[in-house]
Image 1 (cartoon, rainbow, N blue to C red):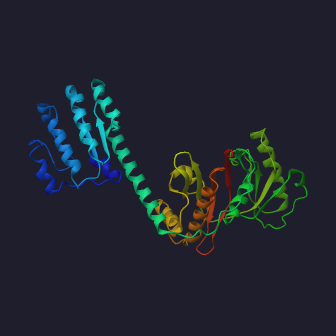
Image 2 (cartoon, rainbow, N blue to C red):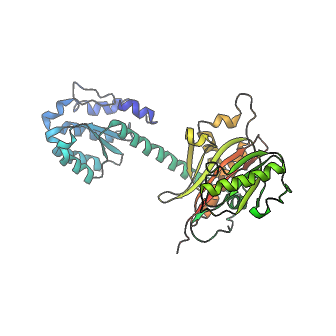
Image 3 (cartoon, one colour):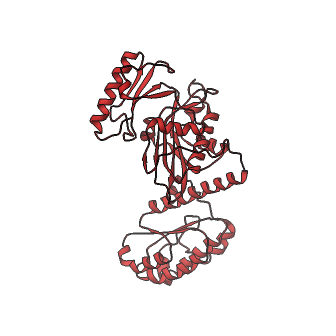
Length: 389
């Protein structure tokens, strides 16, 4: 079970080398298996599991392995064995986890010894292997980050000053897109129409079909509020839609601040999502995945620390399961992956440059057009935090 789970988490379970076997065979159980996973059998009860500890020490010293998971429940001698095992573990710099079978309540003293030594213990092999897999994947990403930092790269633009309102809170869609545009992220053509100007509105500077949305910093999920209308083809339907989304928005969130309605040109392409957050533990990070409703249905996303270069951005794009949709699928033309990578880089710079104020960025959908035709952001949301004193 543990070997299967390890492979599912991207961890190799290599055969024990002849050199290592030669060292551990004299101290291992003649009835067990030293092939990895090691099965040392209950014979350890004969010597208080001291032989088990010697085998573990030899395995940790072997170059065959990078980490170890120990599964044991030696009952009455647990505390005695735990202290000797901790001494061995402290002499190794390899990650070591324990999985403890049922009856752990009878060996609380041993568990206390492990906890004091900082050795993680789990009651389930699955949880333990998942933890090792997470450590492995995190280490791999850190290594990629270090390699990217050593490559050296030139920013596509210097840090940009952003006009941010004081205090914490969310921004409306239009203002959020203006911040994206400041970093060179393409956005759809649009304009905000105050409520008082709805009867006189025209489509100057825009072209049909149009979308009508509520413009409010207090309504982040406009679709749920009934505050979006798409594919409108004439001014009469645009005016009617504007009144409708205003009424729906006020019904949904009576206290919402409303700046008017947003008239926006329709966009098309393959929908992806780009998000960024200034995480309290890891700092600025960027998310990428399939967009629209697929984001919540498939959870097909990947992450990187910000800022990063175009090579890292292309690694992210290739990493998701839906990458085939961007390469051209069943006769559809390949998407403009180069333009998409450039947007990922620019958003990584934005969140890194302004982590002191920008808490979160959500661009969904970002439409990726056919190769050579670029990308365009159709919706965006910025969340701000209080400025540091």
